[in-house]
Length: 263
Ligand code: PEP
Ligand code: MN
Image 1 (tube, helix red, strand yellow):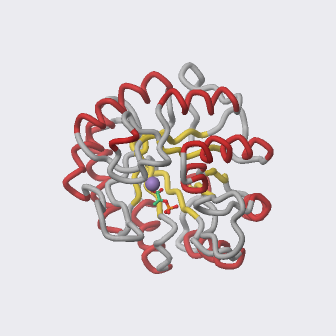
Image 2 (cartoon, rainbow, N blue to C red):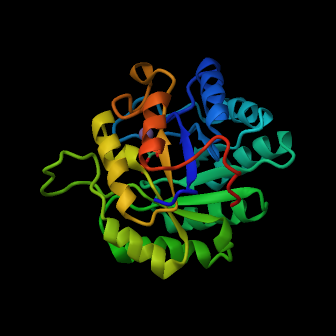
């Protein structure tokens, strides 16, 4: 992990005005590049699937406070609504939208990229697919770039692969650091790391985050919640802001007073 890493942190899902206000206050102090607060939450089993469009005012609130929000989107319509909402209330701010691991419809990926392409204040992040395949991962990137999407606004993210066989560490998803570095090198794109969805529990999130030090990742997306135990999704793996601080310290990443990282 580089010292000047791109930092995305915040709750797995946007849940309420109180939770977002608390997250804004904590993120402000640390100067994160993007405040994570996902409006859509595709789940393995049915449950709280995110606030969806009703949460758009919460993203607007983040932008009005001068922070850059980040959310998953599942369709080009989601992308349009998020971008319109956020950029209309912020003069120079940015918005990050990402395509999650479960969204492996290349047509939808391309349509989302086309929407994101239209405004230079939009950053697009793409996570790897759930199953281990270098070819498929490369295919996602090729599909997106084939729309003409600019490389400097595209981020990749390694969130591990679903465990099928041995999983001695009991991780939620198994990282393949070498594959991630191979993709980074071949594509010339920035590669972020998601310790939250690899670790699956606070203790393992911390351990996995420290492991990433040995690799040349360009940043990190981490789930951090003002009250992790009360979280409506992924309660087990969300860090407190104090735990997040210790990760940054351990990785020697400076945030807060550091110069903003331009994407
Ligand atoms: C997420 O980031 O909230 C998420 C669901 O991750 P993934 O798409 O990697 O499973
Ligand atoms: Mn999550």
